[in-house]
Image (cartoon, rainbow, N blue to C red; front, top):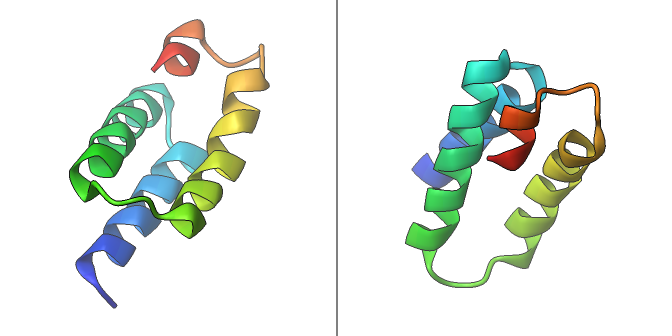
Length: 68
């Protein structure tokens, strides 16, 4: 397993199951990870999109986690 794969697995876990502070930090790190990656990676983007969009749309979630 490559480092980026284990990092993405951990970020996905934090986004899905983490508490509010873990979710906020995972969202920030995910953004920075994509910037650092530099090259387009459609598969990875789709994987995160499928996790992040429901969080953004869920009004029961804290607004602070949705804006990060």
